[in-house]
Amino acid sequence: FRSAITNSVCCAGAMEFASFSCVAVADFPSTGRGLAVTEDVKAGDVLLEVPLEKAWTAARARQADELKALASDFTDKEMFYLHLMLEAAKGDASTASAHLQALPSLA
Image (tube, rainbow, N blue to C red; front, side, top):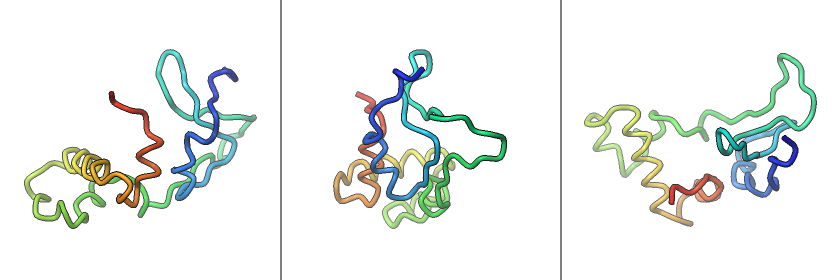
């Protein structure tokens, strides 16, 4: 398990808007990339907090200027995907570029 934990620089982009405690990015052979606890925790411990206004949600996607006109034509899931693709296409110009760069590649 410990060998699965990768360098914490992988989540540097996420650190800009999320607070982590006792967790690190890890690669798991059977399920892929995820978060692993790095020390003992007990029920009720908060391990990760993301402010709602920074979370990837369909509601946030529907508020994006470039997607507002499409909001009524697509499902929540489709809007979510469109928003991710839109922000990824912006590259470094995206306010979420650091987070997007920390995500695994689909290639």
